[in-house]
Length: 119
Length: 381
Image (cartoon, rainbow over all chains, first blue to last red; front, top):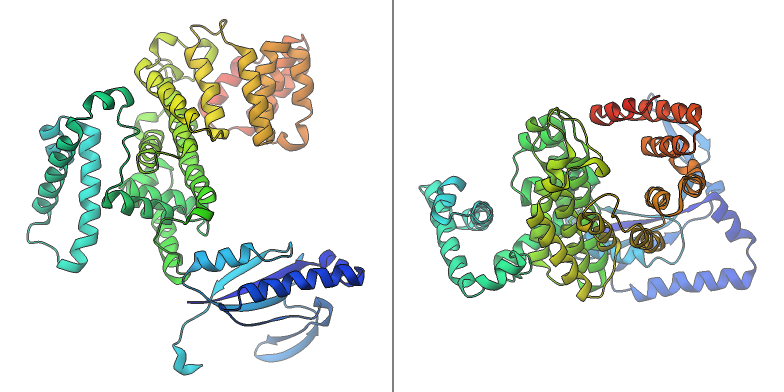
C-alpha cells in the first residue's frame, strides 16, 4: 500500500535552516540522507522543496485561473518536502514518520489506488 | 440469550463474556461458512460449549481464582488474541479519541449504538457517524488488524488505557441526578480494563488502571445521598464502601507492584487505596498521599495533578502553603472549576471570606453539572 509522507516545517525552522552554519546544515542533511538510505527499500520517490517564499499558487476564480505569489494556504507550517513510500500498512508508514530526523510534523496520507495500469 | 446462559452458569459476568466471545466467533465464521439456519441457536450452543469448556478448565484453579477474582487468569486462547487485535485496532492512535471510545464500546464491549448515544447524552446519528467514519479510515488508510509489535507496544497499551480511563471518567464524573437513565459507562470501562488485564497479564499499568477503577467504584454508592446529591469523600459513610471490591483492588495493586513497572495509573490507584484503607477521614495518611503525589508529579507533571497534590498538602502542611501552590497554577487552570472551588476552600480556611465567595462564584460559572453546582452553592456564605 502506498502512502505519501508530507514533511512540514515552521517558518522559523525554515529561517533557522537558511542561517544555520554550514557544518550544522550538513549534519542535518546527513541525518535526512540516512533516513532515506535506511528506508531505501520502501521509498519510491520524493523531494525536498525550495522554501515557501518560492511558492506560486494558481487559483480558480469561477473557473478562471489566477496566479498569485505564496503558498495555497498561509499557516504556521508549510510543506518542506515529501516522500512516496510503499509499505504493508499504516503502522509501518507511521513507524517511518516517527524516525524522520527533523522536528516538524509529518502528515501520513494513503494514496488513491487506481491500479498500476494507469500509472 | 445472556439471560439463558446466566441461568445455566449462575454467573452473569461469565455469561456476558461468553456471549461476546460467541459473537466474535460468529463474525469470524459466518462470512466464510455462511449464516447458519438458526443463528440464535448457533450462538447459544457456541456460548454454552464455551461455558462448559471454561468451567472445566477453571475447576482446578477455582481456589486461586477466588483469591484473584479471575483477574490474572491469562487468556492466551485464540479468541483472546482476536479480542486483543480488536482492542488495539479500535484504540489505534490514528483514530480520533471520541471514535476510539465509541468503536471500543461497540465492537469490544458489544453496546448498541443507542446505548452508546444514551451514555454520552448525544443522539444516535452522531455516534453512528463517528463509528462509520472510523471504520472508513481503518479501511482507507489501511490500519492493520493486529497486536502491535514489541517496539510500539508500550505506546499502544498507553493509548488503550487512555481510552478506557476517559470512558471511565465520563461515566464516573458525569453524575447527574438522573443517573438511572444513563448506562453505567464506568462499569463498562472497568469490564474492559478487566479484559485487558486478562489478555495482557504482565502489563502493570493495565492492572493499575483496573485497581484504580475498582477503588472508585467501591465508593460509588456512598457518593450520593438519598436525594441524589453528591457527597464528598470526607463526608461519606465508609460503611457503605464495597469492601470486597476494595480488597480485590488492593490485591491487584500488589500484583502490579511485583511486576516492577511503576506508572501513573498504579500511583493514582495507590493514592485511592490510601483513602480506601483509612478507617476515617481524620485517620488519612496524608504524608503517604503527598509522597505518592510527588512521585506522580515527577512522572506526569500536569497542572491538574499538581492541584490535587496541593489539596493533599492542605491537610499535611496547612492551607497557607496549599494556597501558594494552587495560586501558582492559575496560568493553566483558570478555566477549570475545581481550581476555583479549591481556592475558595483554602481562602475560607484562612478567613478570607470575601475572596472565597468570589472564587465560588467563578467555579459555579464553570461547571454545568447540577450535582457539583448544588455542592458549590452550599459553600457560599
